[in-house]
Image 1 (cartoon, rainbow, N blue to C red):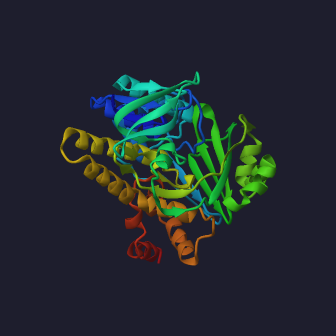
Image 2: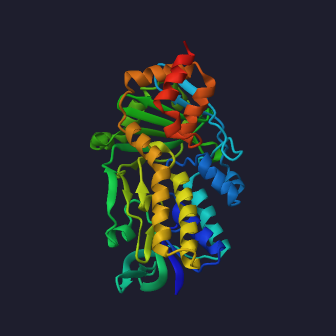
Image 3: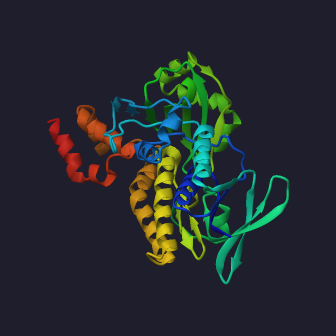
Length: 399
């Protein structure tokens, strides 16, 4: 009998297992994949996530894999580019974009070191129930056998298509359908200019420095264009690059090192994330378009928040359902501003005239440009920065 069983051992699951095991709980962490292995990702761990890795003693381990610190950001909207450096968070003024086969393995190993039991190539197939309360998971192992394990609490950290969420019929809210589709690949020979976002009408691109001198270059289209794009991925990828002539020239001078990877099943939602004997964390409980680049950081935040709530419930400080309700409430409050901005940006439409004039004002004000970039990086409050009064103040300063 375990205290907690976690289905899914990527960013949210492994970090939750590590944190719970450090508190002395008996944890089983299982995943259908073998490790190390890759998974679709924008890779970016913004300063809030990097600060948690540092707190957990893992940031230097990630850097040691050949992952470069990223110290600059740029937001290219066509007529001009907003360049700068987001304000620091907890003394950390840089962030990272590690390959997932490196980051996820480090997190998994840290869970083992903390005392969690880990089973890979072990797929969750169903949940078990006793008196209307979830009390375990039935797994299929890599040799094809079935095994059932019991726990006081089952956590679904198994992604946006979560089996745990489906089996408990977790309701979604604040939901929007997929807005974008993505293709990306990795290039050598690309100058490191930091993290660069490019926004054009009906298109977005990104340039992301990652491990071992490679750069991940992503192309983003409206979801309705998926079939058209994947009919000829390479042709459409290069066609998108041509919208940014400077980027196209840089890419033409580089070398593609890996195959193209696509992302298309990208719904936007919150889910009810707790109930009798179960909880959800990471993308299983809340998913947004990757254009935010804050998914990994939010997963780490939710993992720590959920761990504290579970500990409060198990230790008797408060009833478990009250502790988990607080977890869901705080998660929603903290992530909603980014969620709303992500859904708006994912529409891939030009900014309205009032925002164009605001961007012009930012272009002439480096300090405020840095704070704007901080809203993307997660170091500056979105609601506070985008108040009408603050926007008008920044506009007035150029007059």
